[in-house]
Each structure stands twice: as structure tokens, then as C-alpha cells.
Amino acid sequence: MALKSVTLKLYIYSGTQGSYTASDLKYTISKDRISTKSNITIEIANLVRDYLDTTFNDDYVSSTKWVTVSQTLYDSDTGLEYTTGSPVITNYLALDGYGYFEDSINPQLSTNALYTSNHMYLPEGVAGKFPIFAEGVGKVIIDSTTTQITDSGDSNQKIQYLTIPANSSTIQVYDTDDSTLLKTITVNNVCEPKYTPYKITFINKLGALQDLYFFKKATETFNVTDEKYRRNNINTASLSYNTYSGQQQRQNVNGTTSLSLNTGYVREDFNSAIEELFLSENAWIRFENKTLPIIAKSKSFTHKTVLNDKLINHTVNFDFAFNKINNVR
Figure (tube, rainbow, N blue to C red):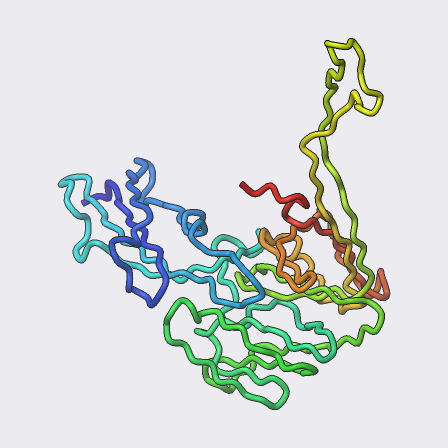
């Protein structure tokens, strides 16, 4: 017997593992084995990613999906199914995360705290949100308050966002045995009497929503784009023209608003959070009591260290992801 080909059916759905129906079938892929190879490789990550929702309106909901892969293998001699028990069913839980090149192929992302830094910065007197992966966490202790984590198996609670009470100081994440400490995050409560802090929320490398506050100077700028054409304003009847009618006329006028924000002084390990913000395709700002989409305008990032920079402040420039004049059609 020799492997000839595979037919793969890809189901993507919400709910519990294995609860898919025929309507959840998103792709059917057939592929022959290359004669010099002993196996067949099919990359499904980008196909699945098309079905991961990335909406946010100052709410924090799990955006994971179940993926069920049904593989039917065929024999080159008989053309019949290659293995008994076919099709082979495999289930995955999909998050919109990523690994770095140095992590090698298909790296395993965090299965507990979905937060890479060891420090968090919140405005004094303001509560926050902390993302965890429910499957790998037994309990979370915030200061002296313990929260037991339960996992129902539903995709809508695989990522859970725990509320961090105002003026908390420490977050401790424990394994499912409730005794092994996995990660400790120090919460820094920042008193900012002069500037208005801005909250940026983005999808981090672990596939979760993460808040990042900018506490210091904020500068708002406005850029206009337009086109001009030369018009003929001669009155052919009187062979004259009005001097108050210009030859140059603007059209297609619009504009975009930009913000330059500063974090204020942060720890060196906070470089990872800023780096993930730069690499995120989806980010939002809480601006004038609305959640608005933004895009990181800055394209270069310098890893700052205490040795080189003494006090570390990050400046990031953003564009609002929409035109000033509403031209949504």
C-alpha cells in the first residue's frame, strides 16, 4: 500500500468541540502526494484566520473558534481509503496569535496567562482587564482575592478577561493543580494629575485583547487631502466672468486625524508590549467616550534599556482608521 492523495474537510465553528454541522464546512481540499515525498502537507492557518472575528467595542469577549479537520486518505494501488477508521478526525482550538521566527515552526503559545510582560500600568483608581487561557489555569489571585477558573469547553469562554480591581498590586496565575505558580504580574498604579491617560486595546501575539495606557503628553494633528481642477467660469453670453469665482476648484476633500502618545516611564520588560502593539493588525483607542479604530503610524521601534536610556518612555504615533468626513457608502 502507498499513499496517493488526501481529501481534507475543514469545519470552523463556535460552541463546544465536535458540535459542528454541515453548514460549518468552510473548505474542501484535495491534494496528491508528490512522488518524491512520503507524506502530504497542507497549511490551514491562513484559511482558519479568515473566520476569526476581531471586533471590539470596549467589551472583552473570547474570539476563539473550534476547527475540526476530517482527513480521508487514498491508496495509490486500489484508489480506496488508505487507512481503516477513515476519515481521521482532529480537533483544534484557533486563536489569532503568532510566534516569532526564532520560536521555530508552529510554536506552542501560552496556555495560561495571555500577557507577555511582567508589569502592567493602570491609572490610579481605575480597574483593568487581564486575559487568561481557561484550559491551563486553575486559579488567579489578585492581591488577596482568589478567583477559581472553570472551563466549560465552549469557545466563547476559552479566553477569559478577569477584572483587576482598582489599585490592585499583584496578579498571580496558577496551574490547574492550584498550587504551581506560573506567572506573577506587578500592577503599577499611576497617578497622573496633569495629562489625560489614553487606553489603547490591541490583539497581542497570544491572540488576546490587551490594554495599554499612555499617560503623558498627547498631541493631536489633522492632515487634509484634496484634488484641484481648473474650471471655465466665463459667461459666454456676456463674455465676462465674476472675479469672485475662482479658476481653481477643490474636490474630493477629506482628512485624517493623528495622535502622538507617550507612555510615561515604564520598566524595561515593557518593551515586549510595545513591540506587540506595533505588530498588531487590530487596535482601538478609547477617545471622547467612544471606542475608535486606530493604526500604528510609527514603523520603527527602538528597544530601550535602563543602561542606555536611563528612564524609559515610549512615543507612538497613531492614525485614526477612518476619514474625517464620513464617506462610508
